[in-house]
Image 1 (spheres, helix red, strand yellow):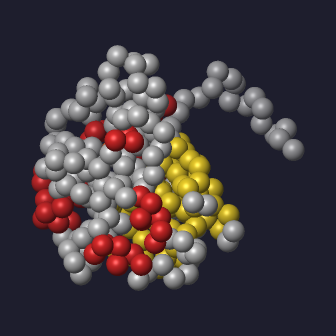
Image 2 (cartoon, helix red, strand yellow; image 1 turned 90 degrees about the vertical axis):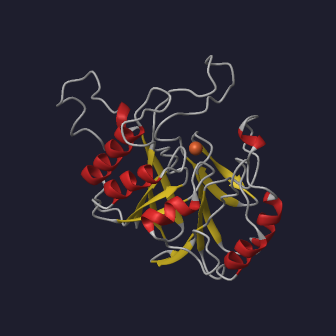
Image 3 (cartoon, rainbow, N blue to C red; image 1 turned 120 degrees about the vertical axis):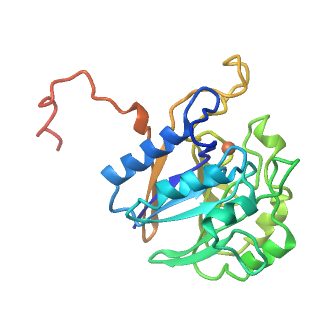
Length: 263
Ligand SMILES: [Fe+2]
């Protein structure tokens, strides 16, 4: 099965740029590319920071773009999101306690979409006891986790100021469970590795990035390639491809060169 992972859209009110870039144009370009090249994907999964300031108009613009997709989509909230404004546009899904989290059964196991929004003034994440109870009740069988905040330090001095609170407590819930992969956002960088034996991956934002080394550019954020991921899952195999869709250009070669000799 195939799905698409996107993250950190940071949509503004329509017509408003963010750090010199147009997040609406970025999202539409990504969705157009996904429809053109990955129409066979089962779903699009977006791991939070859907908007920059939680504005209703930004959520409405997002819904309009997503509703044109031929596949289903699943949204999570990040620290830049606002739960009530999100619900006012999307309606849900929400759990019985009002958090924006839900579960679906897929051909490869259960996908769990978590709500790690803590809320202002903090940009860190929170996964409280109520949300933990929801998760703990759904960890039987193979599961795939999707959330905004990483539950561990990622080795970046700025991001490590605002991870998920008590990530080790969160990790303790997963001990002995069959967690196949953790997908998260928040980092505004490509990251992959493993945590407590769980493979994970994260992606850049569709808009602005966080330079790996502070001071390598004179600003806090950087303009580096945006990526989406095409994730391929078969029994005993998970492949996470990333595609720099805005930076994909033909190579300097004749169109017929290097064809027919790949064996
Ligand atoms: Fe973000």
